[in-house]
Amino acid sequence: MQHLILAAFLLALAFTFARVEIEIEGPNGWAANLPTWRISNRWTKLLYGNRPLTGYHFWLQAFVFLLAHLPFTLEFAPWSWAGELRIIGFVIVFFIVEDFLWFVLNPAYGIRRFRREHIWWHAPTWWWFMPRDYWVFLALGCVMYGAGVWMKSAVGP
Image 1: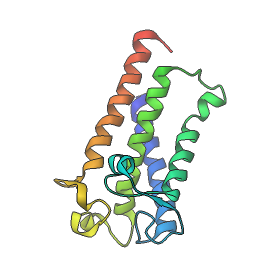
Image 2 (image 1 turned 60 degrees about the horizontal axis):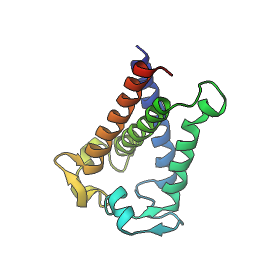
Image 3 (image 1 turned 60 degrees about the vertical axis):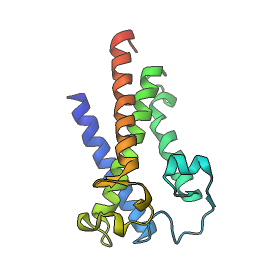
Image 4 (image 1 turned 90 degrees about the vertical axis):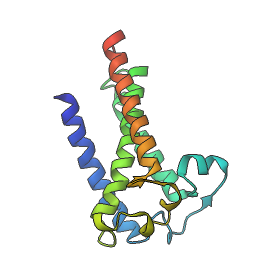
């Protein structure tokens, strides 16, 4: 039941965050029209699929990552490797779900325009019916979260 509640919470957070990003970016994804810095090198290509890392995305991702660690900071839970794996897995899955919802909820796209030919920043790395990043990072996030759950049950908090 706990994992179902967490999944619903993740969906609600991703929905809300996608709406915020739609308000900021409008139809211009990947911060295309925002006044922000951009870095493109082999590391950003590896992690962002041929898209540049933007200041906009860097600071949003840092904010979410730090916020996800708030339970440790407020001492609601003691820090542990199991907890860290679950948080990192949660954050990774959150960003995949949020990115997909950005398209679904964005009036300029919608589910019908969730196609390679309409999304320049995902087009070079599109696999079958969604971007490669979704396949890779969704699997990675789920494995990390599952490893954290397993570790907690195997060795305790």
